[in-house]
Image (cartoon, rainbow, N blue to C red; front, side, top):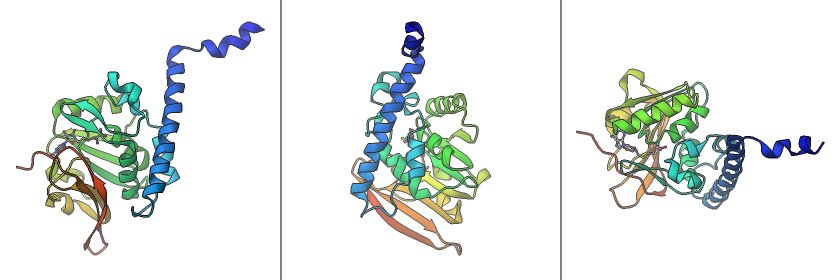
Length: 237
Ligand code: SAH
C-alpha cells in the first residue's frame, strides 16, 4: 500500500523537471498578463487568452543555452550566443498578438535567433518562414524546431532584408531585430490586409515597435506601439 502511494513521488527525473518548468511557465504567463494589463491603455490590443495559452505551452527552456535554463521563464531577454538575445517573453507575446494570425495564415520572421518566437508563431499560424543571418544560429534553431515537432516552420540562413520572395506574399511579417528603416522588400511582400511588426530606430538607443497594416487596396498605415530595445538588423547591402 505504502509503495503504491509513494510511486508518483519517485517519478522519473525528466518528468519532474517538466513539472517544474510547467509551473515556471505558468508564473511567467501571470507576469505577462500583469504587464499587459499595465500597458493596456497604450498598446493597440490586449494580449488574448489564445496567445497566453501558447506562452504557457512552448518550452522556452529548450531554446536558451543550458546554463541559462533556470532563468528561461523570467520575464526578461537572455543571451543565446553570437552576441544575440532571445526577446523578453512579454514582447514575444505582444508581437505575436499584434499580427492577429489564424491557422490559414503564413508568416515571415526576420531574425530566427533561438527559434523560440518561430515556435510561438507556429502555434498560431499555418506556415512560418523564418530567416537568420548567423548560420550556426539558423542551423541550431532548425534542428531544435524539428526535434520539437514544429513541422510547419521552415528556417533559412540568409539576409532577411530581402524577404523570402518564393513564399511571398505573407499575411504577417515580424522583424525581431532593430532596423533604421523598414526594408522595402518586406513592405512589398506583405499581403493586402496583412500586418507587420518591426522595431525601428537607431541602435543601441531605444527603438519604437511599429505596427504596419496594409489595407485591402494596398495603402499602408503605421502605428507606434511602444519603446523597445532589440539587437540590430544587419545585412542589407
Ligand atoms: N526571434 C529570436 C530573437 C531574435 S534576436 C528568438 O526568438 O530567439 C535577433 C536575430 O536577428 C539575431 O539572431 C540576429 O542574428 C538576426 N538578424 C540580424 N539581422 C538579420 C538579417 N538581416 N536577416 C536575418 N536575421 C538577422
